[in-house]
Image 1 (cartoon, rainbow, N blue to C red):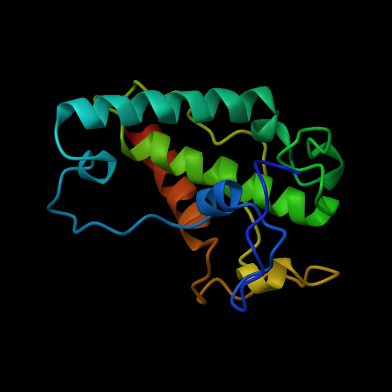
Image 2 (image 1 turned 90 degrees about the horizontal axis):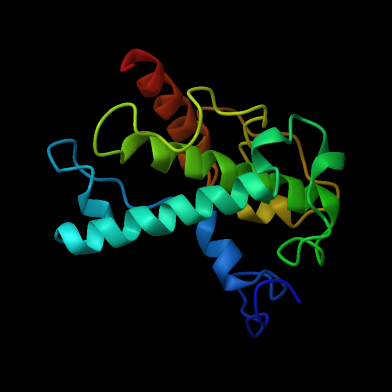
Length: 172
């Protein structure tokens, strides 16, 4: 099954969502604006450099899977990949969009110098993820997006990707 074995059943989360994939869809802690953007990648240059390599690898994997070209059609979801093959297509599609836009956010806010981004200036053709809670993703069918004013697990991916795209376009 997917990325490792499933967690044992827990009353607060479904048992079939592997922890590594689930962890990638959660927003990182928000830092005060006075802190360095590198601090959420560890303490010190060595940890930050290692984190940048991991981010570059994650972006390469996302591009290899075509997550940057999903558009708004769930048919493009890479259902043959082990990370998604055990899930219904609508769930895999939403997780793919969250993951791609979260990577776009990290890419656009952590570069050492403006212009050294791994992803193109525009955030690909992948539609923004729905403004949905994790509980919404477990429903069949997945409900429509919640209002933009409501914070959900997808908020960081949605807003962060737009912020990073804007940052990239103003710092060429």
